[in-house]
Image (cartoon, rainbow, N blue to C red; front, side, top):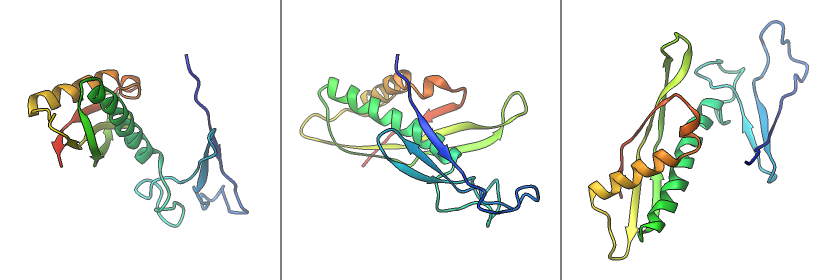
Length: 155
């Protein structure tokens, strides 16, 4: 099977770590050369010790679920003869305590909106089925215990 690598880099930069007064800003580096500025979420680590503009792990988790679902959905739509013009998802993740009493992202809602082109348009039932298949095949969704709901719409 495949392996995936990410390098995470953080520097103290002279800040007082022992007093818990240090920046949580860091960088994610990926094998293709992309570098993403990251930080703890300001909802978890207050400013100025987090960076609101940077991606936080919780956002990245939600984005990875939405992205994986989209990529699988596009593939399934093509297999079924549907040409997609655009796809937008306003995904939302909720953090709360899980069944073990631990804080986790317990629920993610995907809100995919698809615009199809041409004469071939799936009806609502067919669209829901395509999303169901995408969810069943999504590698990331298959890797987590988080409840994931797909609430399709169309543009």
